[in-house]
Structure formats: C-alpha cells, structure tokens
Picture 1: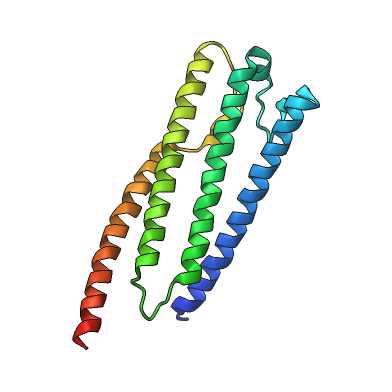
Picture 2: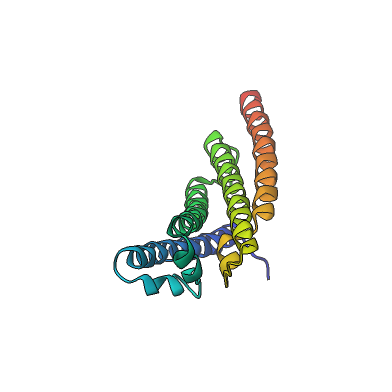
Length: 179
C-alpha cells in the first residue's frame, strides 16, 4: 500500500491540531489552577496540573513559586506557539511548488521558538536545581519543563532547514525564470 503525500500531510495536520488543542488546555488549566492557588485556595498548589506539586515551594517562598509557575506557563505557551506555526505551515504548503519565502520564515520562526523554549527550560532547570540544593522537592516538575538541550538542538536543525529552504527558493525562482 502506497501512502500519498497529501494523505500524510492531512494526517499530520490532524495530529498537529490535536497537539495544539491539548497544549491550549494544559496552559489554560495551569493558569486557572495557579490563579486559584494564589487568590482563593493555597492548597491548590499541591496539584497544579497532572500531579505538579509546588506546595513546598509556595510555603517556602511565594516569589519563587510565582517565578517557577510563570516559567512553566511560558514554556508551555511557547510550545503551543510552535504548534500554531506548524498549523500555519500546513495551511500554506503547496506540494507542487513547495519553496516559498513565507514557509521559510515560518520555519525560521519555529527555530526561534524552539530556541526560546530550550533557553527557558535550561533557566528553569537551573533555578529549581538551586532550590533543590536548599532542600526543596519538586515531584513531576521536570515532566513539565522539558529538556532544554533537545529544544536547542531542534532549533539548530530547524535553522539549517530554513537555510536549505532559502537555497531551494533561489533554485525554484531561477528555474521559473528560465522557463
């Protein structure tokens, strides 16, 4: 059975929509539970989202608690942005003439977002590691902040792809001019 590129593109589009909606739900749930833990019920910090327990940190230092939660929200928001850019790429891609400046710019945007996620993850990891050195415990935290190194590596790959894409645009334009 041969899989058509158009069918594969549609499957990827559906999966990207699922990921985007899931991340939107995750970031909204985290923001709502964070707001509840700050203003209404401090016990909510013991289960912010899917087992994320920052109650020890909130009891120890509320400023550090706010900073860590903002970093987590920032990481997830940037990941959501990456999925949104992917959806825009799927909307604008043309398999007959794939090399366009708009697609290259979107791939470059993915690279920048991925780099930002990696840097923010590394900063959050470093900050929470310092807090762990002071005796804090963060169950399930590292599932939510991700692997910064992987995102930075991914950013480099995407940047290289955008450079290759630029070369493809030049060759496609040159080819269009000769015909």
